[in-house]
Image (cartoon, rainbow, N blue to C red):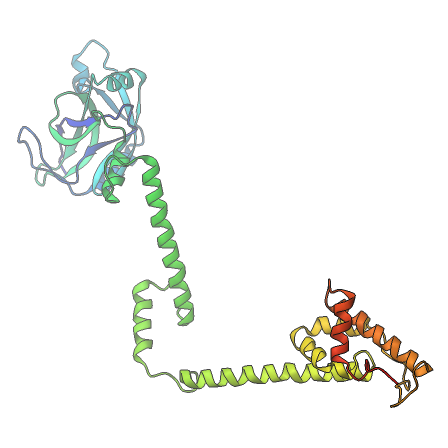
Length: 355
């Protein structure tokens, strides 16, 4: 396919520093200031592939001096070298390694524009290859500037602001914060979507539209009575189960207290207290019973009317003291007097004065 080489100057103003990436060609139709054309950047991938096939950096000179270098006797030095091309929304952007002198001149705004030289198809106007570029102050194409006046963000940050609908005056920290918020939102939604997909028995990686369709389908179906029950029935069963569990705790506590009484670790008069303790804290009650001494020796219960001062009366005194000690162990900080009054109130028969 025959091609024609065309020279065009492009505007690019730097931020207060040098820009590594510059715009070489706009997307789609290329409008020139002098009316030549029309030229079209409708195959940006082809331009990038031509650059890669060339296999070496493309020169950027001053005022396109290298185009007729054969006719010059003076050197035509390079201002920099294009080392990489990138497609951004259909536009062609170039990564440039600027030479020191060119960098200083751009920083001083002695040069503000870049002018690409490209080959194009004369029948269609479609650009096929970037030949070179030159620093100039007479732009022919409507492009972003190589040196932006008074700005404090490079072209990538400005494009990010536009894409994120942020003010162009946004700082780098504000942009990063906004991006992180979006990333967290996307990741959170992705995690939630995966959980929904798993619950619906959908395969891993199912896209959101398919998940939404599956959810809508499930919602439109009648509940399976083999898998779901009415809420009222669920609550009834749950309440019944809770009541059975509570009754089971009470029955178990009563059994433990009965065993403790049979083992003479708890007096019959303390049955109510012991049952409440065993229900609320089964492990604590078990530890109490294990540590408590027997209240009286087996067969030493004093018969009614036993004379005061008898052997059996001495056993009763030991039993009282044991009950008081047990009460104090279960009620830290209680005084001897209060412990005596509490135990006597709970064991009126034992503490009745014998005549």
